[in-house]
Image (tube, rainbow, N blue to C red; front, side, top):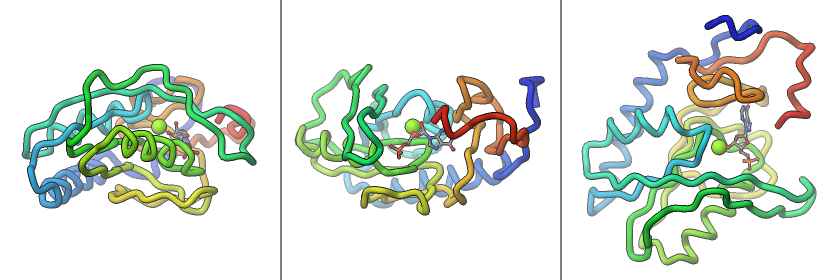
Length: 184
Ligand code: IMP
Ligand code: MG
């Protein structure tokens, strides 16, 4: 795998991702009455998924980007740092938030609150991956590509220490000596 220094075990193949992304795009198109969408890419992890999803979406897409990080203790509700915000008024619009993975649920919960407060007409969330067993906050995720077990995954946009994002599949790092939990 691109000589990035560790061995990665494939969890979800590029072919399976491709098939699922097309299904998700078709499903979302069916569900959005006006067919055109403001699709928000939550950087950086969603970038590859986002690029594939918006191209598979048959309707018109207005692309927007956000970069966020959550802070505060894991025991409290936490808050969101917004590093990059969308560049348009989303009030009255059909909004789709595109995430790479939902883990505790904090990031998506905060983003949902924020876009509802800004007056989105409809708000949907699509996440390529979902680790439901790690959820700490109840949050609605309308579309999930794949539910996965509680394992740290990389590839197809997801990183460990900014590495492995460009792998075409989703996989897990085999080297147990890497202290992954501290890097989340
Ligand atoms: P949440 O707020 O706990 O749901 O955090 C979700 C964010 O944590 C994702 O957008 C990722 O950036 C990161 N994350 C969670 N699990 C993984 C993983 O297995 N690999 C890479 N990033 C992850
Ligand atoms: Mg993310």
